[in-house]
Length: 266
Length: 88
Image (cartoon, rainbow over all chains, first blue to last red; front, side, top):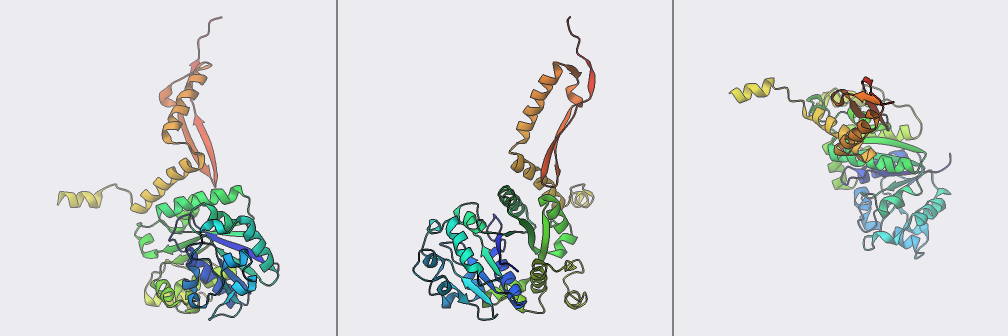
């Protein structure tokens, strides 16, 4: 398999790009893939704390771009999963320190040794977003079932479509099945109908996500978490497996969660 | 009490439906860069031009933007009232 560059973007901030990057990266690595996650948000470093690697940073992306270190010196080995690496963003530099062509060059260099390069895009549609999109073979647009996030996702989809990137898929994050049932939240069907792109997966709202982020551990390592299961399924879909969507309509009670994790044989 | 009953039997659509309807319009505006005012003035201009050739009742003319996937389509439904009387 040739190396794929997968960019995770959203337009709106706070919808879960960084968490999705960390968890999809972790889930792919758990499946035996060699993965590097790149934090492309120059000046607002975040992926390191979400992955729990903030104390291991010596060099960052900007150091590698500007030749102060070799690229592999900026690659931090994950402490939970073998085959998973982080290339952290610079905290003290501004977003103009890296250009789209720098990103393409860095990714081309990384392709030799990896199966997947996952880029965590900053919010917005400016330089950082363009950097994140430039080397992408595949783009995942992440949104929440909420008006402003869906609107921004549509803008992003329009921009990425105009650049004719190969594949563009949708990830709906923080869906609350209970609220959907009460007709107080857009359903995944509503969001897919509005945005009209292929749905890669749905992550249910899950308190466990915040708890695992607090600890710097990916939720995919929690076998009991429904969100973790959803991310593990997404990783398998990314690898080309045909995995059905989790049934989230069974409710969020403990028994239902258990049965949806184990019952469907996923 | 009356208020409460009104609320129960009210025809107000659910908040999810409101969100979807509002987004539908907003996304069409965003994608086409055409506001509803602009669409109205497009309709007026279209009416002006067409009226030179055919008789149209402005009240029956309908113009809308619909979506097919990510493609927007301008649909005009214009019943013809009759020919314009021309001077030969």
